[in-house]
Image (cartoon, rainbow, N blue to C red):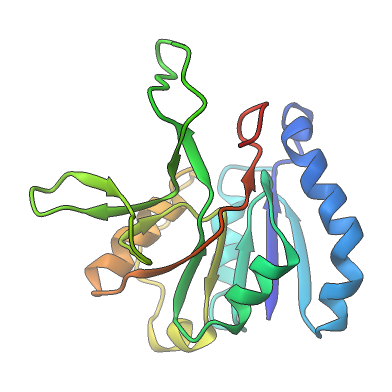
Length: 193
């Protein structure tokens, strides 16, 4: 098992990452005791995340843990032990009503990171345990899936849509994501969840 932790070394993101860093310091011995490899990877350029993702493809079961997610050991173990090829631990993705372009205030209610495509083509929050589209925040892609499928998406010089492009590709193959709960904390916003 590889626990892949891509992060931005930009000091502007340190506040979002501090709780995540503390979690890693406090749990790294437990993770290493399981025989897993931890790869903390600073993404200096916008393409670094995808470049490293492609480099790791096919090597082992892969858990991606992004820099502003505060997992629990239980959540990570549940992902690792799950029989399904593609899994995600749900997390609050964005505040409902938030409009970043206009900077309007939002209520403290969060949408799920997991989305499904409805019959009319609209996107809906996942209410069951399967989703079509997910944010990579805390996900598992097992090695079996990686070996059976050559990574079939076009490389782009952008880190912020890697999960979207990957989910479009897996969806085109007929795969869905197994959703794990309870939600883990997402420090994308100052108040977390």
